[in-house]
Length: 227
Image (cartoon, rainbow, N blue to C red):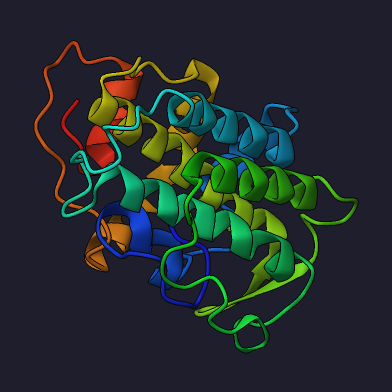
């Protein structure tokens, strides 16, 4: 999922999700569900855990694997990591109130440089810090399709990091199992978002899944992936 109104470092697969899909509502269905159950959503913590999922796979990328194919059409491993580094570079200024025009094109193109793992570590750490700042979830973020609370923006980035963690694991032959609590939260959130994303061409059609499929397999299918 992409986060904002700008172009992403690359555009296939999940990359367009937060880039150009308007939200059907300001309060997703799953927020209301959690509130009805007396629950509390710690979106910064969820985002941090999703970042950790992706981080665990980035650390395993071998020097010979950066040009390997991924489940994201036309993306190599380097393209995929470049996409999320770009997303994480955008997060601090957008959460601080900057507009797309003010940020400009500084995060376009290759943002990995000669040390892709180092670029990922620095950008993701800065994004996690920005998300955890007091009031960050309540601030208005200026996206391409309108102004939204930081919480809406971060729910999209949360899903982006989680699903792409599986993509990267599949590409490099790493452990594909995702945090079950994050899978459950993402599933509830995406129920109200899936058709809008698919209508915008941001995700592929759902593949068929066996009747005994687990929660992760079902979630990945919602995002157009065959586990």
